[in-house]
Image (cartoon, rainbow, N blue to C red; front, side, top):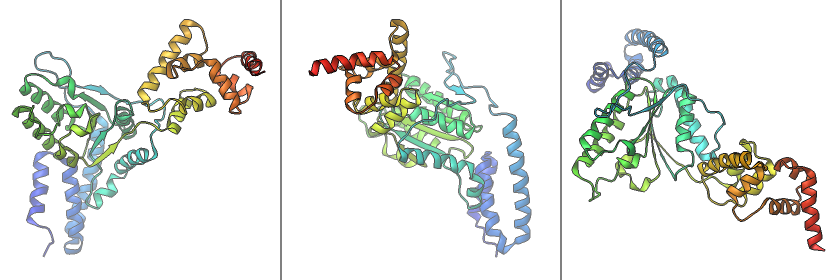
Length: 360
């Protein structure tokens, strides 16, 4: 008796008719595994078909990544998505070790998906990221799209919310249908704008139905694409949303060590990076990046050292002189201070000489 249930056959046929190729192939691999003992000849023939089919899919993917027109708003005709391909990451991101491990595991699953398919598994296809603004959630989505070599499609859910909820629902459905039709990474930003708790008394029934539709779409998301949702307010999400995602990652404010590494990656001197990281307190990468860019502008316009401009932006109560004196007390050499702060050594000596005179 062949150990293949009627339910398994129905699932395979259902996936084939619905065009869910990755799910179809996965189920077929499971069937082949079960057939090997009971009917090795049939299993061998099916395995041969699988090899040919996988090759054909690979060729098809290489030919075209975007087979349909980008969805637009029915009234304004504006595009609903921001599409980026290829995604380029110029600086390697800096995350806490736990977050870094989780993201690399996500990529590894896709790189080893054929091994997972043979065991009746598939790589994680959905990811929910929570945490305060500016801590790297959007960057993580870009990084994943870059590593997986997929287009990144970004939808800001807050921006498509309309007083006409039926219109909002149609827009979101159009985006989901489009993104699920070819391999890509879809980022739903401001996820809490839609996926709120359905027991919120202030929400109308139409919005609650929209949440249900969105959750069903996550359940039915194809194995060919990655769905990422990002929220700054995880506490607002419907509890059912958390259960729908294959993976969840909580992003936190960077630690002192991570802030230093981030500043060094932006070509800020080691000793100055260390000084700032030990005094800046809890702050996001976005705030630091904005301060660096503003410091560069100030440095050019007012013709003074970038280090001084950066200190002004990030450490309001301190001056360049204060930093130099403190660094020297903390056993940073005059040469190192001069090099990292980008100022002449004579200026360092002058400031420290004044300090010596003050202490006499």
